[in-house]
Image 1: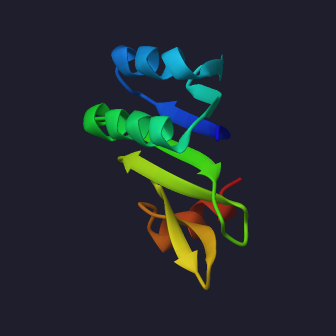
Image 2 (image 1 turned 30 degrees about the horizontal axis):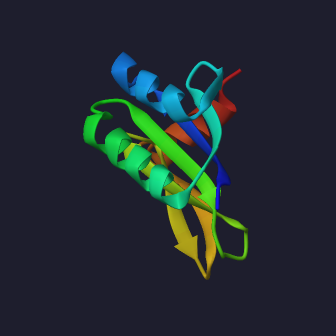
Length: 107
């Protein structure tokens, strides 16, 4: 049974965007939305992870979780999904704690 998926990409090769657009619609640059089966979703994600390179990608799809969806990520990224007692939260990485404090104090 088809279900809605959203794939968000940044700095990925053009041929990957073409592969994604065969099954989904690119509603804004880098954001793909479509209704596909779980098998097609998994095959698309395999293609994404194989060629994402220095770019990044996030897949959001329905799942039997408390939130009703699951996240998959690939490539280099600052936001990393973390399971916290069954909830998926986003952990920010790559910014030292002192840098955040300095940015907050800057005019």
